Image (cartoon, rainbow, N blue to C red; front, side, top):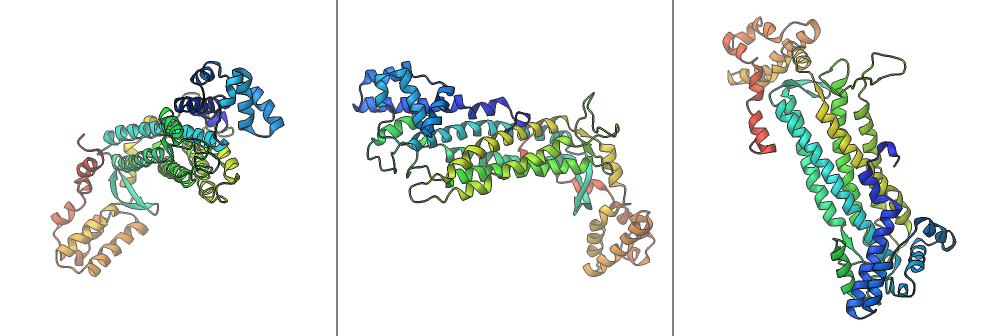
Length: 432
């Protein structure tokens, strides 16, 4: 992932230095377990920890000749450790190191993603409570429907990210497995104790059944979960983008002093951050299908999954981590315009109360079909002629034969739509 869309905390996980350090720790912990079993001398296991070093440039130099990254790494280790290095990698295969390392990296990446989701949730909760009773227009198909509150909009997105948090925590638990079981997973040349020991030291759990690799359905589920989180990011980003449109302008991204919106038009204030989030979400979701395709491997393993994961594991986690913190910042600084919200609510002359009138007429003895026709014919006059629905209803003799003026006027109280806001908030946030 390019630095523009990266946070150093996440990119550090995917550096060569970090990756080789994890490789070394896996190998050294395995040697400790082998020493405890009496397979190798304890003093040699101790020496491996004491003298174990690596040089990234040297590893790449060796790999250029061997065409094998793990062998290059082991060769470089031996250059520092000396004779005891012969005990490193005893009974192990490359995937014991590579797959266990990927599990560590994805587990650590999960922690950062979970922290990002939590920050988004905190921002959404704060702003939702702030605007719990701020009236705004609810829309379906992009058209005015019925009133909601801006806080309720944000509360709905909070609930989505609460689900995302739960899914990501489960995805972390599912991906964090260790495989130290040899060439085809039979422990033919290594005791299962080594796997248990390494798993404990690396904060993983032993993979119940591995071949030469950890089963890739785990990875598919992990990236699919990230894809769903990205979809929730885009859903909220798209909402903000629509609300920032000039014709709506109910909310907009913070526009900082000195910021420029266009190289040609000095007046522009564009939703660039949420547009950027929409694009980043596509990057993350783009990793889902390849991860699903990686599940199918030949027999005990082929290498078709490897190149895919070397690209999309860093890119997807870095992009999602960055996107979550960018989204949290957008919400924290979001400019909200209640007056514009009220103006838009009033724009269609009370049409947003049409269902309330429909239901009242049915309660006064009019059939639902007739009630619908009565309200609709007056509503269409508002669409075509302007004016207010209540005035047209008051001048409709058929309507007024079935409902009193006072009762009709009461139907246009916007607070009717908000009587259960506190109930919904309590379901989402609990007691506030």
